[in-house]
Length: 588
Image (cartoon, rainbow, N blue to C red; front, side, top):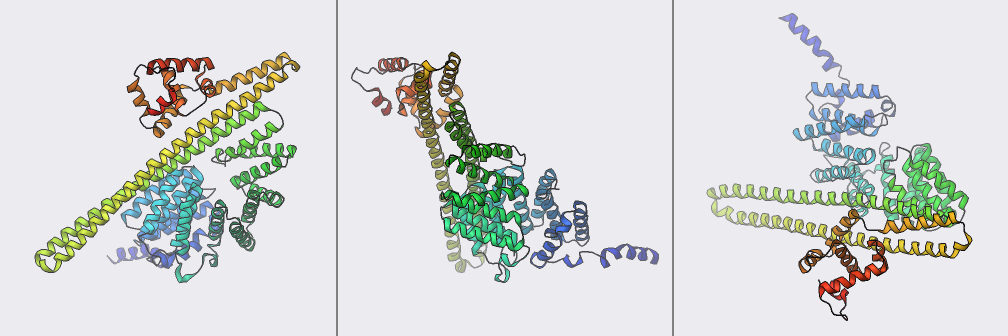
């Protein structure tokens, strides 16, 4: 018996007497977060050695498990997620699986701060590595709501994580929300009223957030405030000997000068940023500054340098590290169209204008989808809050009613007050939900109106371009060869065919048309059930007040064909000769 006891003591001795991370066991997050930062998150030497890093966090997890320290187990697993989701040596596919497992673990043991940080690591991975913006915003928004229920005393890095929410919304393109979260973060104190810039481990986070604030000011055209922020970033980067941020902040100052058309100041700053960004693998920064530099030289009519920079931009955007090339191509293609128009290649100019439109539509569609998903998620949260409030009110009501049996007179007034307040809160939540749904409907209508206007303008621009090319062909016809005449005619034919309204385009057009002119097509079918599809399309285009020439091009008929439509419709509407068909269409 004594021998068995001695063996047990020998086995357990290494786990107790020689625990490497004993100083972290059974501490609260405020008590140990700085030690974890120093040992792991900001231990550059350890993080560059994948094998050594995972060996250490496995040791940490084993010691935490042996001591039944559930929160420290969560910290060890969070370190694995941080490495796999952000490091160049990380296993991105494994990171997503680890996130789902840790979220379940954190919710099981009510580890709120672990859940907040896990969701933010997931959000950064979805946004920066996977390009899944909707899921990214969902994670950041959920982390924000969790932070509303935890104090700075219990979560001393709350300020930093509120800044991360603001930064995510900036990347999402929602600048208004980004600034709102940024202001909330600035008002949130740190333990001991310290500043992030005073913590050597947080200085780069502070640099990033100061840079985001500068970008927000620049978006609002507050250029002096933006430059002040970017210069603060540059000075901090110099103090830290951080060449990547020195280049990035310099480039942001250069872009600010570019936006103010101060090109002589902008050029050397942009060139410096491009060199630094390429050197340190900041490909999106490099592409952004390179496109701005290209535009400057094109506006200065330096065509040789502009062409060289266009080619460099295209090569850079072929880099697989750039997750969303369309984000940059929507700005590069119009510059290329302008370049080819300047050098006399009208066909290529038109092609790049069309490519720019496609890139813009793609990014708009993606932004609209993200905005819609964000709004739907917000509505779900409002509905959930309303339901939780109602459930809480019902529990309060039951508790007060039971107590009222014992002390009916004393608690009757309290019961009424709680019940009324609870119902008021519940109906306030319902009102907010209804207002949010109304706002989403208005946003959909505005988007449809914008797309219809873009559609009309696109047709107008293409017709103008066709007329311009047609006149050039007719004026130069005697002086050009038969082969060149044939090429010009082919270009004209292709341009005219691009305006034709296909069935697929008609379906997309009809969806937007119905949102703006709700019920119009249904009322038209009720009034004239024997209308042909072509006549229906003619009436819809007439409703948008397109000219006969524009309608003829889109319907693929001659001007006489359009007049035939009008003649047949007069007969179907039983209109006299002096009757105006447009007035009748507007009255439907």
